[in-house]
Image (tube, rainbow, N blue to C red; front, side, top):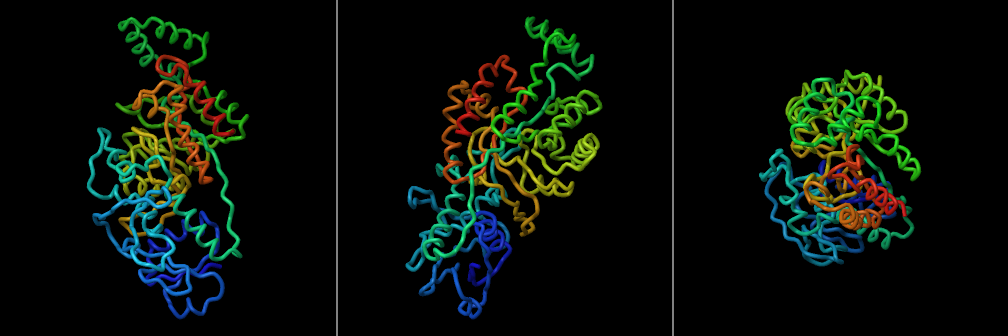
Amino acid sequence: MLVIYTPQITNRVRYIFDLFFKEQIQIPFMLTSSVDEFRAADGAKIVYDIHPQKNCLCFGSAYLLFQRGISQQDLTVSEYNYLKIFYQIAGEGFVLPFDPFAAAFYLVSRYEEYLPHANDRHDRFSPEESFAYRNGFLQVPVVNHYINLVRLKVQEHYPELKFGVQKFKYKPTFDVDSAYNYRGKGPFRNLGGLARSVINGNFTEAADRVKVLTGNKKDPYDNYDYLLRLHEKYNSKPVFFFLLGDYDEFDKGISINVTEFQSLIKSIADEAEVGIHPSYASNTDTNKLRREIGRLNRTLKRDVRISRQHFLKLKFPDTYRNLMDQDIEEDYTLGYAALPGFRASICSSFYFYDLGRENKTLLKLYPFAFMDATLNYYMKLKPHEALEVVKPFIDEVKDVNGLLITLWHNNSFSEADEWTGWRSMYERMVEYIKS
């Protein structure tokens, strides 16, 4: 048991010490604000305060974890052991020159996303707006490094303590925005698509559509068996998120009333995890969110508890509150569309802290590191270039024994048009991850 003294035990203090010691370092601990209780305790003890104590392992505290509410933070970034740090601590007697707990809380709570900022055209927080991007560490899971620093200091001071062992893990995830390119879309959508192809002179596409609809060719988006077998080979269990929203400008999936689509979802759920992919429109309409989750629940005849937002539409704290109201327990949205990187500066799952309500929630967040569309559409990389871009992110997660989550789409394996060569790139990426 590790006894931790701090002059004030707030919800923020409880939350971040849970993240460090219970969830990551995996050691039992007790918080106390009683000096007498702390001095009377036997065994391993640390202090978290603005004043160091003699003969103790002391971490200096900034003000953030003892505050309530949200206010602009005056942050200056420096370096310690090649690691970007902030909330620096002056004075002697502390084992680190900064407050790792306050710094980690600022990043994982997404504090800056509650402050005024500019959004992109889809009303999303832009990576260029982020503190991590502006200070050159978007590509580094610094929170994991902060946790390992604290682990090292405690271990050096109390070598008799037994710590948990973290291992690198990989979780491939796939968003199914449209289950098929041609099948399941009905005669009107297919006739319209066929007419557009002919008018635009794309006769190859028109011929492909006819071949697929007449059963003479496989639908280019039907890559599910390939993905299941590939990840079975590497002993990785994938997660598939299905879009079940009504047809709209940014939601162009297949109707759940199509029997073939229902059968697909059920068959994949037999071999992989399945979650809801809440539509673009549902982000501002909780009734639509409830209907879409209900559609998936009825299809699978069980309650689905995991999600990822379509278009990565995420607004703090509204999106997560809406998901929790619908009994979602795990969300995989946390990442950026425009750039690869660690949005919360962590590559481990963690619980959402609601800054507006000042409480730790039961919603667990699973941040992803990079996405296929980012590499292809936003960064305009060739497949071989994309592979070299993602390798350092993979190495970063391996370095801290974190959880690597990748985001791909079923249509990215079509080997058609802008996705030519990306199937091979993905296979080489998985080989690199598993090497």
